[in-house]
Image 1: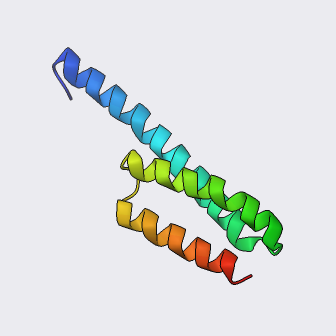
Image 2: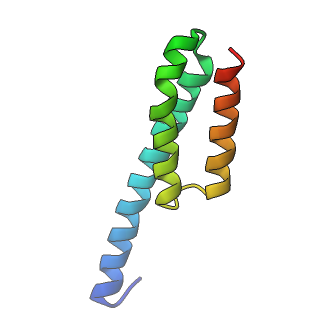
Length: 83
């Protein structure tokens, strides 16, 4: 167990950040699933910018890797364009 006050604070902080990152990542995954399951092109086109923005925000905060974000965005845009 940690002996220093700062180490205890770091443990609390890490847990809070981990839970926040987990929540944001799961929210984006659900949005991606919703976009992928969309059948109507018009609604997919309106959903796409918000999902892309969410993915960019995850990449900016280092929750996911930049390349993963690029791959996700590329696949989603291809899927919507092919509708």
